[in-house]
Image (cartoon, rainbow, N blue to C red):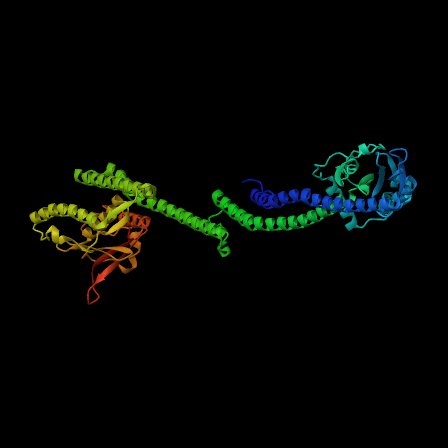
Length: 561
């Protein structure tokens, strides 16, 4: 028997089927591509608005007119609006302190005028955010984390380990002071607002937005805002963490329910398997298969089927044992008689006594031969019945053919009886059939085996019926069943033997027959064939008005085809 496993194959299959679906779902959700894109769009829109506000503020407060020159000698000098570097730097420094963005200001010729990170120092927005994050990180590391916090850290570490889908261009920050190094700023210099999301060398998100500084219709400079995408990454990480938390909860419930389901299926199946194995190994005749019919499911049906099979096996084993004992007993009788005759033969002197002993020996040998043949046929009957091809059998036609054959044999017997002066009935009166059905009476079965049943019943009835009495077969049917009755006018059957006569080797013959001329297997074989065809057979006595026995009746019932 295979060694028991902690997780059976059925449990593993159930777990695999139930876990794969949520696992595939959570893997897809952890990438969160659309969610990230929506966050990036929102941040870029905000930065575009901020860059426009900054550009408008600088255009109003950090610009002054500058003489461009005279188109000709007597003309009035032309003036153009230009950024005042000092005022512009102050504006960049002050505006940079109001947001978390790094603010760069470029002139119309693309020269970098001011950078909030350099001008504001520790007071710049980006520097303050970095300092605040460092302080929070240092405080978290210094504090003793609780179990929940530690688990959160582990979860965050797992989340950060999962790669994030990236389709962003590389961030172009090379430290150059020229506007051409920054694509958004270069676009803004042409008069358009531009915003882009990037990925830096560390794989982090960077956001930039640039807006032109206009005075009248002229672009006199560009404001470019840039910042990291930590808020976006944190939001995505938190969303991943929430998804993973829900997934772990759902996974725990799924595993629990899968284990419960596997246990409710696997444990009873293991019990049934162990019980079946014990039956196979022959560890006791009375091994009980667990009764699980209360489950009202397929396992309950399997339990009922195994119980029925085990009961049938026990009955078959008991039948085989009884059959072996009966065979031994029946064979010993003629063998004992034969042995006695053989032992007596050497001491017999007269020829007449010796001839009588030889007659006994011949009778016992014939009896043994008949017994062995009948026993062989009976032992093969079950296997042969299982291989028989079943078809529709017309019972009326089959019984009529059997009776016609019997009547021929009865006519020959009547001639012998007439020579002896014994009064007999004509074959047509001795053996009669009544068919009480206008329709054909059809039974599903093997015609040869069904004919064997009624041959045995007729032989039995004729042997007990005097030659001047009748044997009658009655055939009828209703909507569901076919009824065949074989009635004789013999001495009947003892009331306490109505069931016993169907047992193997039971033989109670009329007085005029020689002892041992029948093996006692005919009725047993008939019942075996009838049961194999889903029918029943039973015997009863026929009584007259005075309750006196006037014969025996054998009734066979089949289902209609």
